[in-house]
Amino acid sequence: MEPSILVVDDEPAIRDAIREALRGRDIDALLARARPDLAILDVMLPGANGFQLARRVRGHADIPVIFLTARDDPASRLRGFGEGADDYVVKPFLLEELVARVVALLRRSGRLTGGAIQVDDLMVDEGAGVAARDGRPIELTATEFRLLVQLARGRGRVISKTQLLTQVWGYDQFDPNLVEVHVSSLRRKTEAGGMRRLIHTVRGMGYALRPVDG
Image 1 (tube, rainbow, N blue to C red):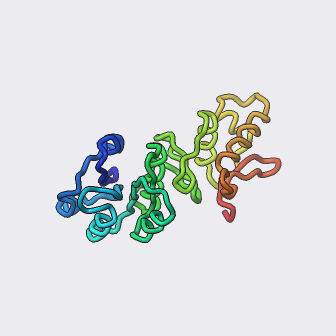
Image 2: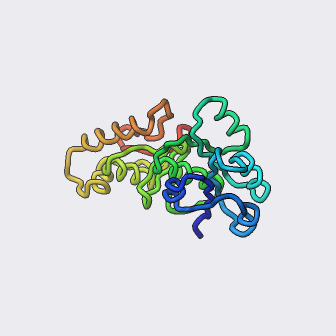
Image 3: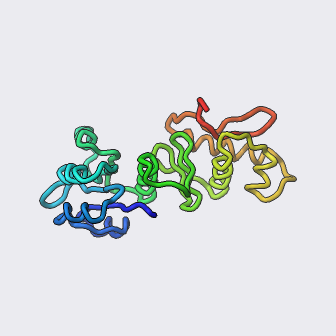
């Protein structure tokens, strides 16, 4: 069964984009009936604010909560996490980033299984065409994504350059440097911002996707 997501925001464009429209007036009855797996709450709402709603949500169920807000100052962020936020997304935001953060939180909470592969803080969802680290989307070319998918499918195992050429490019008689170039680019993107390395070279054998201590 697909997870149910509660979205409370006073901007129609955001509600439509996330495909769930709620106003928050009957939140208690709604929560008792719908039993959502995750809540996305706008901080600045008419009447009860997002922080108050978060407390009411948590009174019904211990589910992940994402706050949406236009406030990006440190004090607002600290208050958000102090109020129990699992994540804090600043407007305007990329829908792809919000989706990646939602998927990461649902998987971390055990409310979403299948469809995506998780290796440490890396999530690769082949069906959705999404890859993220620690909930932050990774912008990849189509070839880089296919390569990452193959490494993720074989997580923990060594995959040779010949295997990757066959799986990603569809042939096995080509310059292995093609794989090296794309793996190098994939590493740069997956390790951006000082993230630890997950794609490891096994000398004379190929590559393996696994945690540092795996």
